[in-house]
Amino acid sequence: MKIIVKTLLDITETKKHKHNCVDKLEVNQQANFMSFFNCLSMRFNPYYDVAPQVTEQDIEGLGFGSNYKGVQKVWTFEFTIETVVAGIDQQTLINDFDLIPMIGGLQESIQINNNVFMTTDDKTRNIVFILPDNEDTE
View 1 (tube, rainbow, N blue to C red):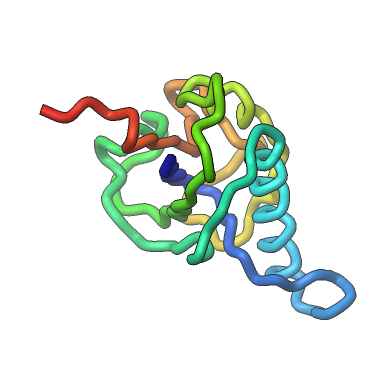
View 2 (spheres, rainbow, N blue to C red):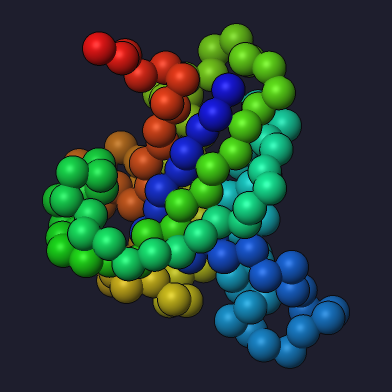
């Protein structure tokens, strides 16, 4: 099963930590990635070949909150889970990630006022989940 996550919060995987790097930005980026990845790992084992990729793109129609408009930095992370896990759907991921603390003020292009993943607020949603295997095809 393939899952795609798009977020406006910096989840860059740097593989740096306070014992091997003095650059606080890279350490904090990795801390965000680990918080994100650990939250994913509570329900299943995600497998990935490519770390989250950041692009600048127009976010209209992507599902982010109405407070965010225009061209923004978007981190996209695609991964698979080995087997379909009972109860894993978009709403489960939305519930799991709502209000998970993150470090703000890294490389984001949005103003972050709360330093958490917001999944349920229509104005401040900063992370969306796409399950292409579950989308209806016509």
